[in-house]
Length: 373
Image 1: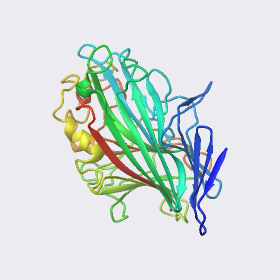
Image 2: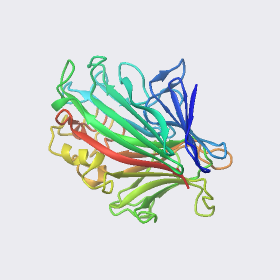
Image 3: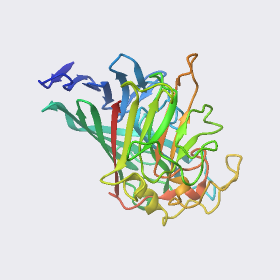
Image 4: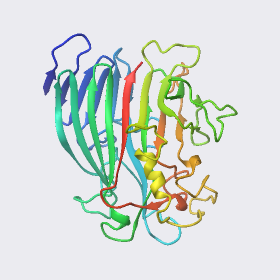
């Protein structure tokens, strides 16, 4: 176990390395990033994203060392987990033997193929640094191949964790590995909690005010606020053009008092919905070949998928998913999802929104910030 600390005033940053677990500590708490995929008998956790956050008061806000599951479910994916729906051409409808949910928290033939540390964990001038590459693939690419690379570049400050997250496409036009053409749907980042005492999810605009929907309301209100449960039945959404951050808080009658979790998500030098960053992937994919022109009844339902164009605003929204609550009324699992574009109700749904990859090396960068406020 190695520990490094920056000398300085109260709130300085330290880092502790314990095997493949790197934990930075700052004024807000302890932030753990794993550098390789770790699979146990009943649990899994992936590399690159913030898999565990213990708040400064000792409360565990998120701990992603949990059972294997797709990141759509509330509570899974930590802070900055990335995933997407992958498919290989197999007729006019998805075939579940040739379609998967690929993400950074799943180890094996489908999911994390490998990871590497690009910049070793250090603290210098009171700033923590770490860069990790994660290569994701399906079971049609070799262990040295991948569909995408996700690079997590961290800068840990005394009162904020900054992450530049870059997704690079490695499967030019869907032609990589063996078998038929590869398609991608609903590439997304997530921010999930399974503790913290939070009761509400809120999206804030660039001025720090509650953002407002312009396309579709949440339970009759334009406010980007959600306190629902049962995400399999209904989730909240936010399509505000200037949405800039997501907050887990305690509701309108209880102040944050320095314990709310704030997650900023923007493109480089621009808002999220600007045709840059992951949102740029949605715009670029609008002109790319779709898996099929219409949704199939493969999963038991044939529907509009909200839209068939990845650049349509209805499928470029943030999604708010509240899970179960404990006896005190706090969420035991909840998440925000930040998709480039949505892909229906799961990896076997909405063939028209599944598109071919762009040229090899095409990259999309998101700037994420995590803090307790």
